[in-house]
Length: 351
Image 1 (cartoon, rainbow, N blue to C red):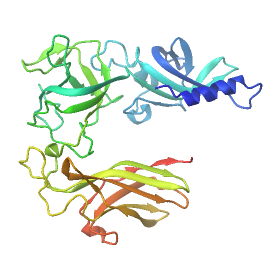
Image 2 (cartoon, one colour):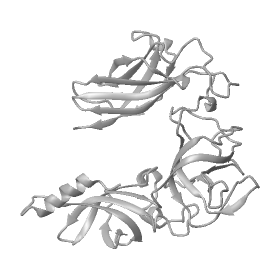
Image 3 (spheres, rainbow, N blue to C red):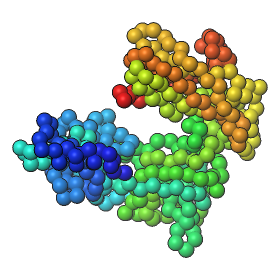
């Protein structure tokens, strides 16, 4: 996960005979202590000063948006399934500069988490009574334990410092897992494996054991049979990147109406995923822009779902937010849209 190019650039900067700015520093390693009085984070035995101006975040939340004080964030209550306070014993990535006068690293950005654990595989046991499979006694288990039983339970993190997002799939649409048999489906999860036993569900009832605590859990393939809004057409954005005065790319998916009783999520609609066009729209300087349109490409394995990619050039500034509309034609009124997305934040780049 180390950003080797940044490190190489930093090394070159240190090697220069003179420089006009503080040398860049990047660290990635274990967190051992946080001293609140001096705002010092210890990473791999090195002191890091974390000023109030530094951006501090986990993969799922920023300290600023949680409203937590630094000590509550770094050394607050133990996170689920852990015995250490806060993020102690976890992993931090620090991007900052070297302060020669003070003899310490000063952080500009601190990414921190209890552990950089990733689990990919197959769901081997599951029980879901709620749409997000997080009700009392619900469980998702992946791969297998030593001895062959279904693997550790995977449970969503309920902590504002790194909260779990809803279970998703490759399509990006809201899912409803209640009553679904998920065994055999591929998944990818990110989070940490706890060092303390927690109460989790199993095929024999509630048990106490160590679990995989996730902030992200996604099925590896589109799952139209699990969609929450089967009776509606939907369009979602998965990526929106704009390079100032250069180009704009937007990607995402659409789905048609789906047969609610089909085990495979068969299409039940006169409109196909490749019907009409998907159009990017945004307001810039008070003017509504209708950008280029593209036709979605139907997923051969899941004919109710289609993926789109819209690319166009921008002469100047990029908008902060966009939405996309699935329209019968590029000049159709917005009121005729098959579906419209929620507002989506644009990744604006200067390169």
